[in-house]
Amino acid sequence: MPGSDPEPEPEPDSESDAERRRRRAQFLRELNEAKELRDRVQPRRARAARMRQQMRMRTFRW
Image 1: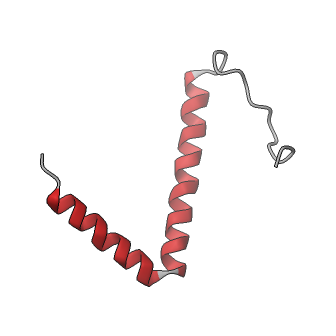
Image 2: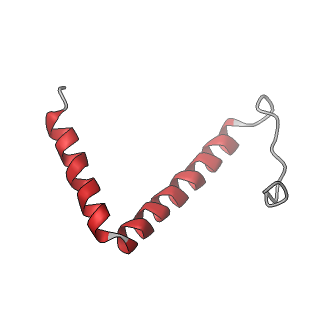
Image 3: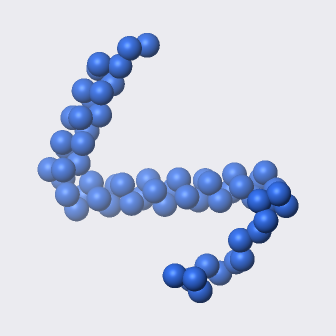
């Protein structure tokens, strides 16, 4: 949606490091909320995903 962004996107060169970190932190918070919501809505799929993740971690070589 082109008009849904309240602030215009700054040029990548002029964007400060602090601003980039702030936006990244906001994105990660929203991503985490979405994952938690999905886990509550689909508990069986979430459990299967956790099991797959555990299996990946078990077979990972350090």
